[in-house]
Image (cartoon, rainbow over all chains, first blue to last red):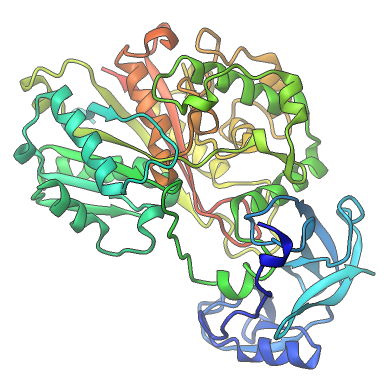
Length: 138
Length: 390
């Protein structure tokens, strides 16, 4: 498949899994909001229908710093993995300061440039109809 | 345990793995079933229990098991749709054991058929569209690239050990007529090292290739098997599984999997330890998964898997024969039916039907399953079974 046949990347539909409206509103405002359990005072990501810590639905969305460290990192190099048109695609599992991990790309980074333990900050992956949370070396 | 009747895997059939057959899971299942009937002497109407493995090529079809019955002319009094990905067949066998023991059926068939190289229709839903797919983090190579990268950070990787898994299994596939024809040539270290990186540090030759295929296992009581003249039996003497291990711990060490959790339970049931395992038929989607299972099932210490691999003869003639049919990496992965590939091979070996790759003194086999790609972890379900020849 040549690059010019790849359709533009679009945002997924919202609220398919749980009520994620706050997360998506955050992306429009340039803020990263994650689900927070008010009973235990802990974040969880991805969002769930209940708190993983208490089983209750006493949940809300809170903004996080977007600051964290790289827990693991890979670079997708072949078509068919969902990253067509942006290969090689650096993908990391980020450990945020708030005690939760999030999967994110590091757009513009080269493979090998990002290492486990590196500090990262929130960045944005620009899509055709919006943006998605991503990271960059701090 | 003497009061319980023994339930066994008493027969099996497997059709060859092939690429892009253009056929459905139902049609492939039919071929496996017809082969099973011919081999076992069973009549279609004698099958009164059925466990069907959920298939990638059937997408999210919730009616798969019942439609399989309609397709194949089966009227089971016990029916199960098994949906733990690569663990579905192992779990299906154990559910069948319970169903036979409870009298819900006499002859249960565990049927796995899939055709993802013809028709990949899986729509996983859940969190994936919003929180995993925008970052291209939902596919197995992405997940295992991250896992392997973290493992390398904590313990280091030995390329020669991962290559040895691929090479030993390829050697076994050469001896397996049901393996994908294009994979039935020996593999060299140079070829492994030259294979392209898919998701750093994961190479193409660390990975499975999707194909189409099907297999079937018969689960019944020892008494029923004897009555039918089926003299070769494989008894599941131990089984343990866990799903979503560490699932409430957001900062868990992702190099720790459910196998470490289930290993003590598994070996206690079997009354044996890793040193007594005659052959290892582990789920192999990627070479690193084999190495991690060796460590977490207790064949060696954490982080010592590579050295253990390099120090151990893993061929069918060796001390610990590994995936003697080639495994999924070298025989091909017929989608989620691939979860039964190494199980069928274990049974075949215990029946003494391994042909040119037969393991001498094949008294037991450790078979495992790995199922489902989760979010930022290793895998969702870990399952392991010890089979003993009877």
